[in-house]
Length: 593
Image (cartoon, rainbow, N blue to C red; front, side, top):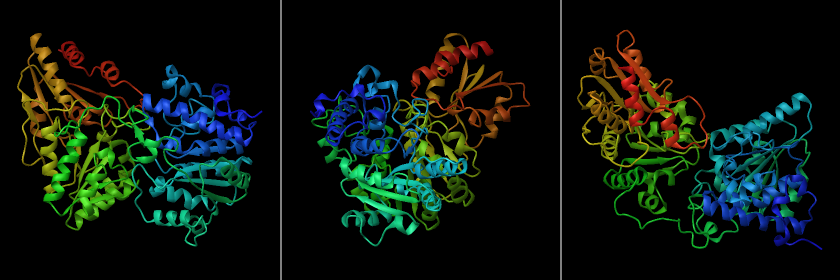
């Protein structure tokens, strides 16, 4: 008697070996059974919804056909690997709510030998897999090497580089392209017309990017059909040349609300799986309630006022607050280059050179890929483009693959790039208004982390180029410098110190790329100068201040984040541990005095 999905005990599946014993009907039932706890977990806990639901059958088929972990599978981004984790010894992290947090949302080698890399950014799977294949060939191995990459990730430059080299290997190299006709939002780029043509012709079109690059090619039109997937994977297993298996899947499959609104349910906080309503969500406010919606509201207004303004994103429109309606309103002034941060930054340089007013909204953790473009195309060429950093700081995303506190040190040391650090919403808009209209210099505006609001006493300027530091509170015993969101922290610390008889000066530096030499000169007579920043200390703002005051008797202490990959941390705990709370800062000052 064949088991039904109701009879499959998921917790008995400890490794892929357990599913290789199943017949086809059992595998189909397994997919149905797996979707239940997947939906239960993401709807109660939050996480990537659509990518995982769309890949259940493909991941079952991959582990059924390939002899993992001896055969190697690299998942691009790896936000679609919840089903993979379920089949590789981590089932309870999805069936037992008490163990939901025992696994990360991405592949993690510390969790399992089936996870080869810690991955959270797009487009690198093919390049990584090409390295595994080359290592295998050098060592004399025989295992299959498989890269799984989504169509949205193909727009990233490193995906093209990996595909370009992988085609030359001449040995076993299997690329599975998961094509669901979606990135996070809709796809953008010329290659997607080619993919669409392949889907519409059942893979027979003459225009074939993969064949043109030198790959053999297989197409699976029903990418959520386990027998079709198994047949295709068996055909390429142990193959001795590079091949692409192009599978057409449905993002969000099995959850109607996710199938209907693929963009909203790419990732989600807890939601009602029946209605799709976000749990605890209040009625929309007419006024922005966070920095992302404030940015979107402001830019929506500015686009109507300035026909030369171009608002650019690299495949993450939702992360900068631009939903489908706002994108439609912006028309040709909204530019989504796909998941291609280097293109976004370089294009902004060209736009500025051509007389337009480019504003790029970029997620902090993703801008790392465009360091060369910031340095060469923007700063060296002195192009007056504006870049607004989202989800930077300790208070952004907290997976080790998505950290947002390396940006200040990364960008502030590029010559000619002005990095502004607003302390609150009014200063943020003031800086943004100036940046988007001026033609003097390239400007980065880094959204404050933590709470949404304003800091009393902050002076707004008409021009932030070479702007002096602002003394928000005058004192005589110690100087406290708070970068961005830590200005309010320093003011609270100053109040605590006041109750202890210590009179503190509190300074808002406004930016972290240049030093105010006059302000620094005044500090030479101080006993203690203490800096706090929402970024790493090494190479950060505080160390610039300390270096400038190095030959003076003043004692300089720099507070900030460590140069470490923190993972799934609690921001309040980290602040307390690092002494970045008002009471801990006050204690530090007392001990130094």
